[in-house]
Amino acid sequence: MIEGHVTRRAIGTTANRRASRSWWDSDADAYQKEHGDFLGEVEFRWCPEGLTEAEAGLLGPVAGRRVLEVGCGAAAAARWLASQGAAVVAMDLSAGMLRHARRSNSQTLAVPLVQADAMALPFPAHAFDIACTAFGAVPFVDDSEQVMREVYRVLRPGGRWVFAVTHPMRWIFRDDPGEDGLVAEYPYFDRRPYVEFDGDGTATYVEHHRTLGDRIRELVRSGFVLRDLVEPEWRDGHEGVWGQWSPLRGRIFPGTAIFIADKPGYKA
Ligand SMILES: C[S@@+](CC[C@H](N)C(=O)[O-])C[C@H]1O[C@@H](n2cnc3c(N)ncnc32)[C@H](O)[C@@H]1O
Image 1 (cartoon, rainbow, N blue to C red):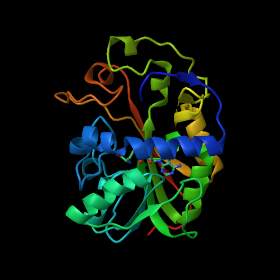
Image 2: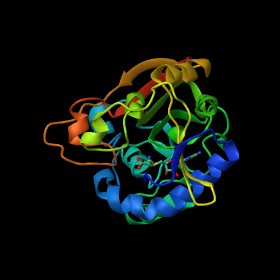
Image 3: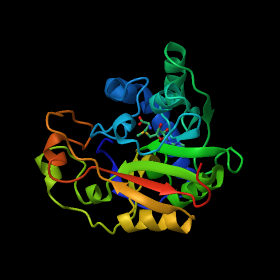
Image 4: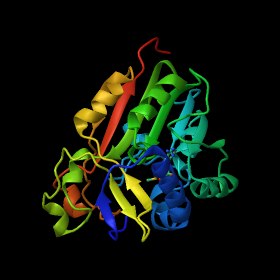
């Protein structure tokens, strides 16, 4: 995010989707240049704190499971899942991000890629055993409950949904990794999205805040059972800065919330 023309204001679904698509298309090269090494090409990293699926095991066993990665970006996580024996599909809204996924597919391990909106997943009911995302789609749509409903639909009974988002408490602070980002400034209960806009007033970047209660409510209303909420801690020796994530802030308060939820029903 770049603090330029910035505001908090409501935004409709169409304008939101248009802003997200064009932002991630035009930012894709810069995103991969800045974060590609940290993310890896065949690696599942949940968050800027560095937690990997290999160490955390939040998805449960993946070998032989059908897994959907939502908002995959360059699809490094999907490739790691495939390397562990999962049958993976990776989807994203942005052609620019998927271009990086295709390039990485051709150089490492190929996974199927689908361009779609997470609010309308182009898959039949019960198509997957597991769905997951590290910061994909959920914070970037005006109706994240619709994403929950869609993921619920495409999971089979007993399926698991794990998603990582910016920890809700981060929204009370300035988007700043330094000292200025340590002072509470914005109301936690202000759900109006963060919007960057151009000279014409057209939204160019949109990101949405939900409180912890909102996130849980959206899951429960969609039919999920919440199993856990993981707040990865900043590790000693990790000096990496990713946007507003920094060692300074990470040592004081959480930056990421990872929700682990199950669709009720049979377990394999
Ligand atoms: C912060 S990036 C995360 C990408 C990847 N998961 C990672 O860890 O690097 C957010 C991703 O969400 C995607 N995205 C945004 N809105 C989306 C939507 N409505 N449906 C699907 N993907 C979306 C963006 O295109 C982008 O690739």
